[in-house]
Image: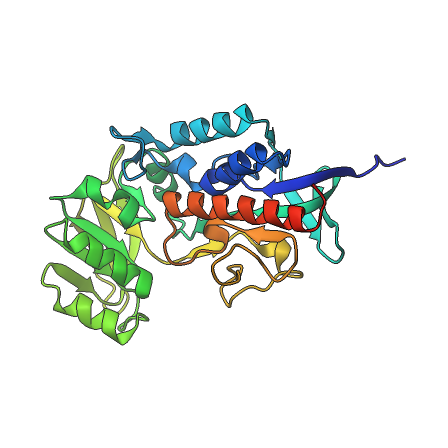
Length: 316
């Protein structure tokens, strides 16, 4: 005989700045939230070394330590944190249903989605290792570019994200090598013009990255020209992958309104989705800023929206 469904007021799906902040606010409001961390407790910040742009850490902080601080604060106010994934949801009724990987069924009056987004990587042998070890590989120039000021860096990608990353880095670095795999960019015309007019951005057309060279940190990249077949090394200290992010929203696509790239669409000036009682926060709904501090802000919004919803429905 299967266990009876667990009934709660607030389920938070995902950890990271959005999920943990939502947990702090929901706990303090008496919602007794249950948070499922997902496959990686703490999200993308678990593979981020130095975080220097989050308020309250004047000397900077390691990403994993920052997430540990967030977790402890959420638990201090009574959040139940469970290290497991939510693998299925059903938002067809007034009570929202969710199932864990092990089949445990949860019925929750409100749900806060904080599943984040995952950076797309090239899949090179040394890429993941150097990214995890803080060895010079990153998917966020705004987050990590400051550490490479005064050094030559490379950006791979041809869309608006790559153009924005290259322009940002051009203000910090002597030379920015922009690697574009085709003979044209996908970026908007205005972004292309800005990149082309920036003297210290060197565009390498028809170029793919074959390898990242360096044992403990990036020393150079090996690139290949797709037209000529020529292989060469470019000496850089930082390698930024800007080929996009994939929001972790697949389990919600049957129920929630998503944009063309899978980000959850929320109503203006709120965290509300198209389903009553379901709220979205962090990088699962933000394809513009994607910063820890903005994720935390929307986590706060989602918890406050959930509290108001429960009060209006006279559930609490």
